[in-house]
Length: 221
Image (cartoon, rainbow, N blue to C red):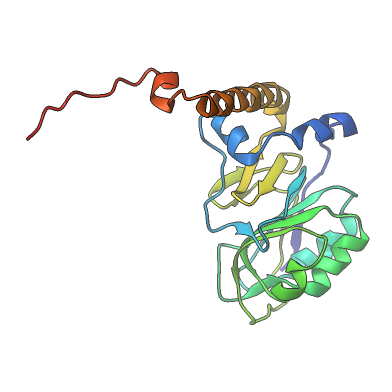
């Protein structure tokens, strides 16, 4: 079956802007998008210290087949994040140490896969962050095609090539590229707001007071 390949013609953010994004956690970015665009909890880092910030390159594969991933890796550019819709299949690994090493040599900054990985002990100790929804020893087949740089759904969230991917111990949030400037400003303001709230908590103010929530009177026996 042929591989469908779409154009990857997005305009990447400059280095300074991407550096600013490192200060906006995925949870904060999600809050600034009405708590949307956060991937399902099944998509999580193989190690809690893993962090990712970068532009998505999307891949869609047939369940249990990773031919398309092999074909896509030579197309990757340094700093990009490979985001794979593998149908959430937990029973067949789509990536492992060999593919992650191949991607590392191309300068790929990380993987996000709604599907399974294997060789996870090695991947946890590596320097390429991997977020996956399962781990399993069973390996994939090759031969059923897929798509590269087309629109996908990963962890229940739409993703397009060029969208900004943020990942940490909480999971992964997707920021549509056309919203990135506005969400960055809102996210930095939100980080400052939360720092102020923590300072007020340390000084004795309650969250109920800060949020204007009234403490109810006793109204039941």
